[in-house]
Image (tube, one colour):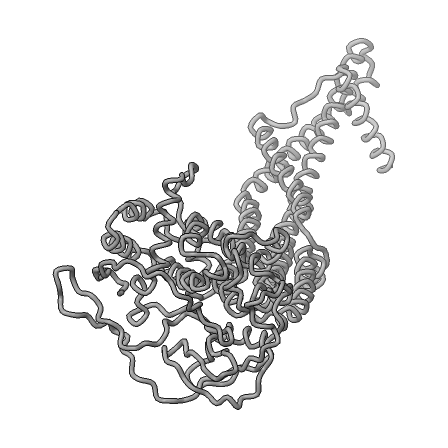
Length: 624
């Protein structure tokens, strides 16, 4: 009977709902307006939790129930492993390069990949922790809330709906029985009417109880809003912790990463500011000037006709330029690739021309021009010296190195046809030009040539090496090692320092010590060491044959006269303090006398007209 009664009730509910839908029956309001409003807000909360439960897992990048499984499936882990493999491969390849070119100092890309791979592993670990934390603190509570509280609320709401349908069906039955009783008035219909009235009262009572139960469930759910909001707070806390750990992991390596990249010496040299290049390479003289000048001196190319005036091959110049930018360009590299002197000279001029700021700087361009326009030679030289004294140290030392080379080149003018004037015309536009897009005009070029020519002709007066406070061209221990590789001679150990390049001298035993500015005599019994053959060039009648034996003469411990590095001045005069004359007749440092039995030509020269002695005024931080 109970099953029949249940089926009957269910049938009446369906019938009542159908009649309500088509408008044949009136529908009783299930809830009061205030309770119904609260119920609508609960629906919004329920939808929010359903959305969170389904969308949060889409943030996951890995899968797996354990930390290790999830981490291994993350893209960051795959990226870290690939970075490590590439770093190991690059490191192995650059080991071979470093054996050939020690100055390359490995690969900065390999070191950077190592650091980045470690960071990616850390980020993958943090990602796995973050995802597992979201599972525990966000997704699981949302699912529990939907399965427990929201499910209970929906169950109570369904029960209320069924009670309302039962009540409406009982009301409709009662109304039908009352109408029938009015029509017939029989005792049988009266019994059915009483039964329908009792059923209606019972359903009304049950409906009211169901209303109260639903309202209670609804209010209890709403009272837990703080607990519900804590789920989202936990999600944000997990995200904050995850991103903070990631930020800390990245910030911890950035100083090291920046230091490695910013201080890595292998970077483009051409077009790089001079001071920046000297900083990263820890040098005083630009590597381009040093290597090019050393090559021309070492292989006896100073007497090449048209040196600095003639241009080298474009392809070869670009090749050697790229080698210097890549950090492998050295004298040995130039020799291996048969670089001719004109290509090396073009390389030197290209470097000077591509500096972002000219070697003699934009700041002093007007001062240089005003000084060059002075007619009286001694006044002009003093004015040029005053401007020279204001140059930044990096520009000063490199300019001095360049003029030292040019003054030596001038001594072979009979052979190379490059007088001071010719050299100045070629070099001046590459070391001094005005700022702005207009560039130099013919007047500027003429005055710049006069400036350079004055420095070449009066090198000893502008740069008194006995009182020079900046070291001569930096021929470091690395440089000596590279040069020894060219000569196929192992550099000897010295109690003072590695021997400078100037110790490679003709086999007659004379050598010039670039450190102590003295000559020394060595035994001529040293076995001759043949120099590597020079690049292929057409032999000239006055050129020393390439098979002339050379001897590598190491410095010998001996007593050197004490040379004071503090400038000594004569009593003040009307023109200010001037330096006392040098007491030593030793050649100036910085000139590398490597040619066997070679000396500047001694043909009779026309005697110059006597000029007033140039005695520059001393001021500033540089001393002449």
